[in-house]
Image 1 (cartoon, helix red, strand yellow):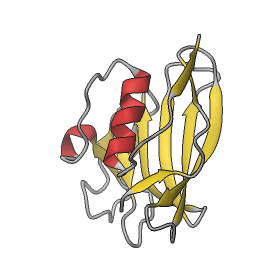
Image 2 (cartoon, one colour):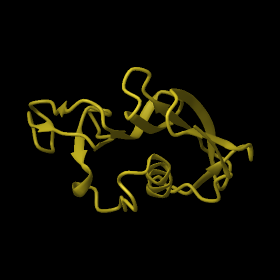
Image 3 (tube, rainbow, N blue to C red):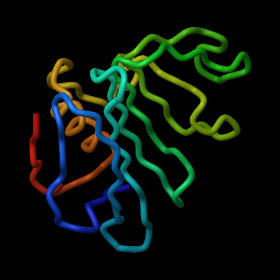
Image 4 (cartoon, rainbow, N blue to C red):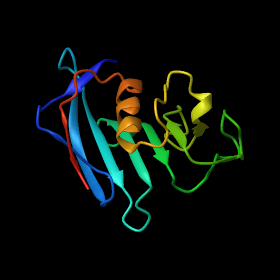
Length: 141
């Protein structure tokens, strides 16, 4: 579903400092609302997490960069019981919610332009989630 930001305020992005915020997204027909969460780790500053949620609590997609490995549930429909190293993508799966992870190479719709650039990865994630016309980024150290 195609989405856009509900507000045109600048998006904050820090290359080194911890960050944690959410921004509202809305479908183009304005009937569905979503949330985008952006997080950089406090202890491990290279860890990034981007996720979209529907109905405020249902995680639809979560992109994890330089975080811990994930072990899929033993009954998962994709690579059951296997350890998935970072970076990886969690996608909503009926009956498993966001507990199933995929290596980024297993998500063909995700086009990674620069795997070493956190801001580029955020833009890649926004494209993957169908977000159009995002506001400008305000970069900080």
